[in-house]
Length: 212
View 1 (cartoon, helix red, strand yellow):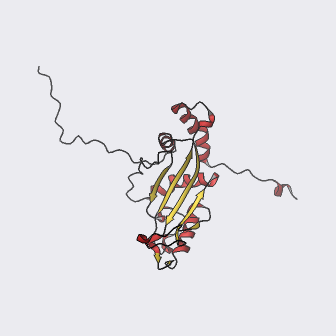
View 2 (spheres, helix red, strand yellow):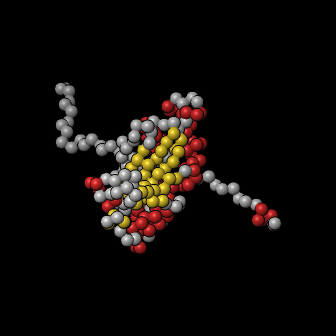
View 3 (cartoon, one colour):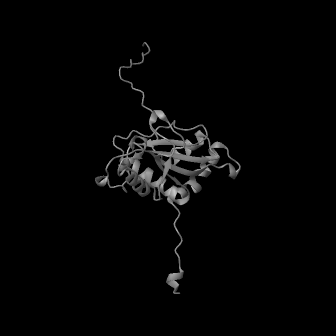
């Protein structure tokens, strides 16, 4: 075997992962007084899911829906998507146990960090009339969730060949974190939270001046 074949170039760690561990975690530990290294927060996984309940006709999904969602979701995340079946029947939504009602991907490790990088730098800036993501969508345990309205914001997806658009739900699952810690961690990673509206000064009366 030649030297060229035996030499394997080491993989480069995702830049967001490197920045998180080398810059953001130390800053969070100092800000929140986390003296024990094992108290440091960490991003455990990112779950991307697509609900397909509205695409059910009779007992099956509409033609082409399943293939497109699986294909697009796999392109977006870089990992094979899987279908999720309903665990119980819900009469109001015309769903029965065993129906395929959603698709999802669970990302961990480097693939998770690479998705987060592309989400922040490429996908979210392509949202039309973007005003920022809500900064209150936390679950009380440090996990954060938000929704995206269509898959076309990801450059990997060719919308010219898409038969329909679909939204998705993204959840960041954290360990050793609280809502405040997670919010600061995401903000330091340049996550585009919605900025509070500026107070308008229009129509305000000028302050009274002292008499001479």
